[in-house]
Image 1: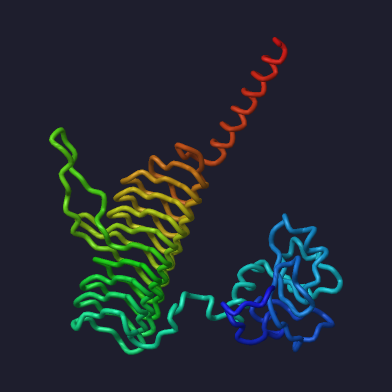
Image 2: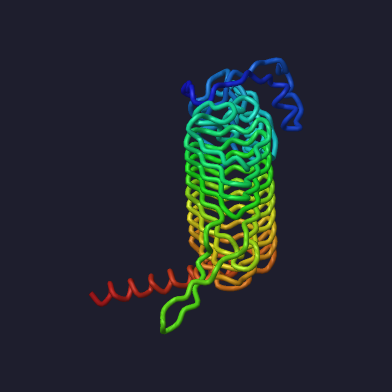
Length: 352
């Protein structure tokens, strides 16, 4: 990997440390004190680097890697070349992530863009706001009356924290984030441009025009949530919009008023979730999924990218398509359409 000053490496790892993280056995004949000086992809890794492999698409690259050590799932262990020490684990990617976190701790969450300690000149903190010791505020940030922010939290440049907002400890609020009408837990990461707590899209429509419906709810974001750049979470209309503990949300996601998202969900880029939808724990929504309002997606369900969800999804289901339906049904329909199109093409050619 090319050296970069953006994320300085904090140290090195021994082979024994990596083996212990993987819950594996030290490979026979290897030196547990062998020092790994970095991490790198399979194709560019050298003798001092740690790499990983868990995807069949990289089988040929694995067989030629020069990595000193490779975390590899059992399926691909036989492809590791003789010059590379193989650590066989079903969780190769997860262990690689743990190793990277130890080597590059500064990459785990956004820091101060100004290298600030305390409240920077040029920021505006209302006299009634309460900031615990250890809060860092970058230039241009605005913190409103009655806001409360916990220790270890970073407020980025030009972020705006509205009146009475509560933000927990060890959070990262990136530049140009806007937060209003919200309670936010501990260790929450909001990437640049995130907007939390603005009006939900609520209007009483009629022939005389569209009458605005006041949105008087809040946004509740629980611990360890991460929200990607330029995503938006509207406050509730008459109840709260809630994002559960540990949920990870990608860039450019829209979450409407009264939506309740459970714990440890994964929501990929450009998803749109309409109002009053409930998404239970451990749900995964692929990129550009559209979810109609007032539906429920059951615990552990997975929705394929670009699908349109128009009704309730049972727990554990795997659905795709638009409108979304069970994956096998969707695949059968696609296969049938391909066969129909192929027959028509053949018929047209014969007539020509």
